[in-house]
Length: 89
Image (cartoon, rainbow, N blue to C red):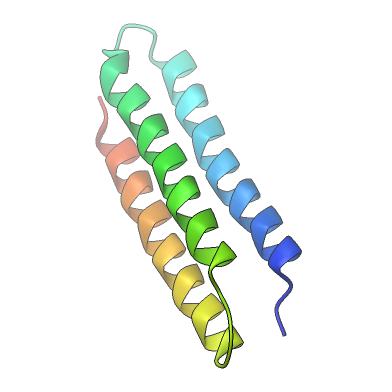
């Protein structure tokens, strides 16, 4: 059975890592409009909050299945945010 504590650590590391990538991008592109990158950070924080809420509501039968679905959704969100970060210029 997956550990909620471990999953939350993984979530924090994934979202935190993405936010660090955005900050690195901002430092590498000081001439760029930072409003778009700030929106990405806001999006990452919202994704974190939504995912934590879902994790806190995991109950009953199908515990593993619920975590798997949450993890897949998280991976899609992070992938989408990484695509948006790559398109910033």
